[in-house]
Length: 413
Ligand code: F6P
Image 1: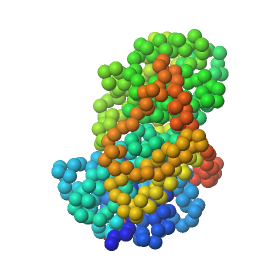
Image 2 (image 1 turned 135 degrees about the vertical axis):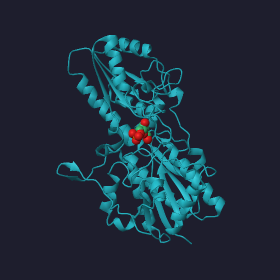
Image 3 (image 1 turned 120 degrees about the vertical axis):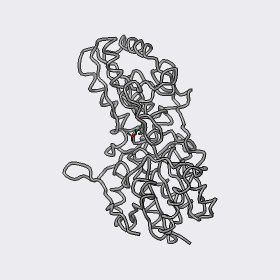
Image 4 (image 1 turned 45 degrees about the horizontal axis):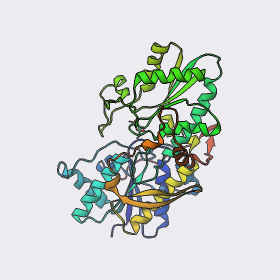
């Protein structure tokens, strides 16, 4: 029976996705039943192009795993490739199966978000229908935290910690001048406001800012936005606003669409950045005060110097857990975090059919978003705070963090 492992990473980067990879490799190396551990470069596309590297032979010490876990983004590279339906492109499925069979793969792990779970699901169905004995497991990741089934996704906690910390630091910066000002912070998250929700966390340490917060779950009205700022200015000289890149008008049109062209990625997702700049100009035009916008952009997903220890620990556990579940015979499932308690915070691992996670988006519950765009409910704080808990120290060289690199020379086979 084929007993090698293949793992790949897909979708948008996070600074916890390598911890899941580390968990997969570590657990696979512990299991006597497993032979070689292979990694595909750039996700499923690397499998199709036969760009595969050996991973276990590149991990020599506990220190290598620690370095991998404190390295942001995908150490194996990523892709945004949507596996077409089998009926449309059967050859693609056969090509992927052929490569895996050449490598004697018995277990395939795909670390990614909603779209990547769709790819894993389609492959799992194909293998089952064709009687190909390759177990497929999905391992969740996304800073957007919008995957169903799992309480939260690895990568989100670290991004949320970076956002909350950055907001605190921006608060100090905005308050130095005795002048009216508006600062707008643009936060990622496409259609779900989880990351923007994390911007309110400084309230728990006594800050009044951010004074206004706009999630994609609530329709955005530019006129109301100006009225909200005017009202906030009556109480605060330096008004701080957190806004999601994905806020939409009541008609369902992304506000940021007006500043982007119609470019979409392979999954058909629109590129959304630019709402902060757009609103900066709008506020300047309408209110004429000092305005600045800050786009956190990719910093919020690659700021590994401020990883959440909780996030990294869970990401590693999910990777290791997926290997254990696959060896126990599970396939076509996504490993997930099931929260059992907020205080003290506790989670267990569970698995769910990949189909349930694929292509679906989990939004911030409407009842957590308080009216008036000013704050979130206590439930939101109770949910979010444990996820940003704990600090990690990363190895440093010449005053900068050290990152892990695989030798990416593809194997010949
Ligand atoms: O994967 C999630 C995400 O980071 C979104 O928050 C964001 O809209 C998108 O990816 C950006 O994608 P790209 O990697 O193409 O910049």
